[in-house]
Length: 146
Image 1 (cartoon, rainbow, N blue to C red):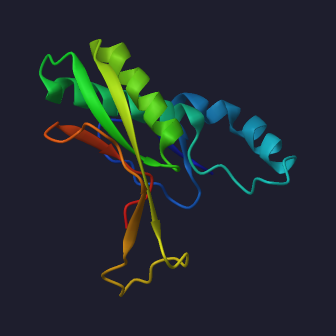
Image 2: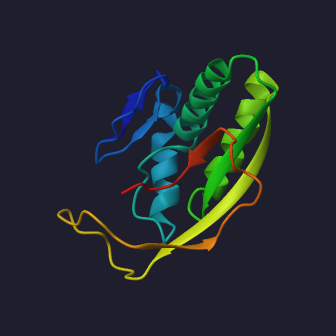
């Protein structure tokens, strides 16, 4: 059974059984039956509503930290974080009227294996680098930082 979440202003620890918004508890059986019928899915770890609510909480924090700024430059690390960045930039505009310029960077490592726990360094190559961002304050959005 997924753990119910009702506060989104702090980091949410996600247990193996997953999390859902407290308002979704009654809908879990329907969600689980949809997953059971979809061969590409095994389980629901974080519900869509939880992700949406956490993005809104992050956006409110960013708007507060920007202290009445009208613009933000976001540096998006491709490709894993592009949907999240899109949702976050819309939420930042919704909560503070702050426009975002999204700049993309693409990196790769020579070795495609997963980084080992004792591995301290891995060479990274820039495949795509943004132009005209030198000297700007940037919000860096990455899917997995290891």
